[in-house]
Length: 482
Ligand code: 5AD
Ligand code: SF4
Image 1 (cartoon, rainbow, N blue to C red):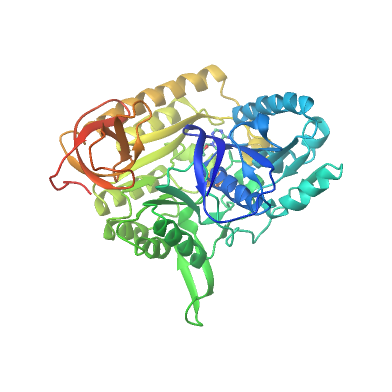
Image 2: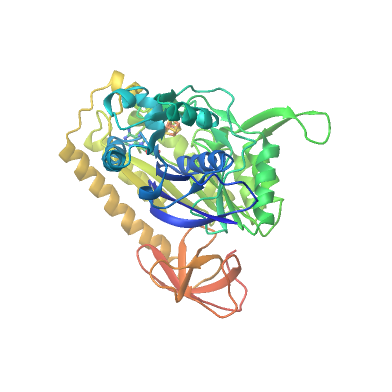
C-alpha cells in the first residue's frame, strides 16, 4: 500500500493534502507527482484519472510540490477569478522551476483547452499543456518534454470517457467517492465556457460505472456521487454485458442499478438540469431509500426573460413545476441551486424575481456567483456585460443574505429529530467529535462515541444547529428520517 497526496480547491470547499491509500503492487520509479485541482467536482474526479495514469507509469504522489519531479495544475475556466488564482499559483511553481530546472510543470483541464498553446508561448515556465480529453497521452507527452521539447495535446474527443481507467482515490476518507458517469456538455448556456473546454456530451458505459461502484463498496466505501455536467441527459446505447441484446440506459435506470448494489451504499448525484429532470428520476429516488433525498437543481435566475438570454431553455414556470413535482414525489427532499447575479441586461425587476424564486423554493443551500464574462461564450459574443460591478455586488449580497436566512431555517427543521448519519470521520474542528451527513446532505457533528467508527451508519438526535451545521449525539432509538 502506498500513501498518495494531492491538493484540491473546489468551487465549494478548500481541501488540502489529505492522504490516500492505493492498493496493488506496482513498480515505483522513484519519481513524484504533485497535482493540484481547481473548480468543479468533475475536475477533482479527472485528477484521480490523471493520478491513475501516472501511477501506472511508476509515479508516487506527494503533497509538497517542492519535492516533486512533475507538478500538474488541473485548472478551471468557469469564472475569471478562477483563472486568476491559477495564474498566481503558476508563478509560484515558476519560482520553484527556476530553483530546480528539471522540474516539469504542466497545465491540465479547462484552461489548457481554452488557452491552448498560449501557455507555452506566454508562460515560459509551462512545459506541457493537456486538455481534459487527452490524459491518456500524458506518458508520451512527458517523454517529449524529457527529450527537450514542449508538449501539447488539447484535442477534444467525442468518445473518450476513461471508462476503463480505475481512478486512484485522492484526498479520500475511504468512505465517500465520486464516479464520473459522463463528460462534456451539449447545452450551450450562453454564460458558460464548459461546452468549449470539455466538448460534446458523452455517456460512459453503465457496466463500467456499476463495476466501479461495486468495487468501491467491496473496499468499504459507503457513498458514491455520480457526476456529470447534466446527469439527467445520461443516455447509453450498446450491448448488454450478459445477454447479447441491444440495451438503452437512461439516468433513472442507471440510478436504480447503482442503488441495487447494496442498501448499505448511499447514492448521490450532481448536477441535475431543470429542463431534463424527469418524474421517472424522482420516482426512482423516492423508491430507493439509499438514493439520497437531495437534488442540486441550478436555477441561475428567477426571471424568464433572463433565462431565455441565458439559453437555459426553461421558464420560471417550468422550473416551479419541477420544484412542485419534487415536493410532491419526494416530500422531504433537500434542494440546492446555483444562482448568478448581474447577468447581461438584468433589471431590478429580474433580480426581484430571483429573490422571489428563492422564497418559493426555500433552497437548503445555494452557490452564488456574480456574472463573469467568459471569452468565446454566446453571451460574450451577443450581449454587453452591462451591469456595473457595484450593482452586481449589491445584488449578490442580497441573494447571499436571503440564502443564509433560508439555510438556517432549513437546518432548524431538523432540530428535535433523530436521523441516520453516515460517519465520515472526525470533525475538522475537534478530533473528539465525529461528522457525517444526513440523507439531505446536511453536515452533522456529534461527540465521538465508543464503538462508533468512520464508515458506519448511526442514529443521531439533533438538538441544535449553527447556520451551517447540525449538532447532536448518537442515540439507540430508530430514526424518524432515514
Ligand atoms: N459567470 C458566473 N457564474 C458562472 N457559472 C458558470 N459560468 C459562469 C459565469 N460566466 C456558474 C453557474 C454554474 C456554476 C457551476 O457556475 O451558476 O451552474
Ligand atoms: Fe455550463 Fe449549462 Fe452545461 Fe452547466 S448545463 S456545464 S451551466 S453549459
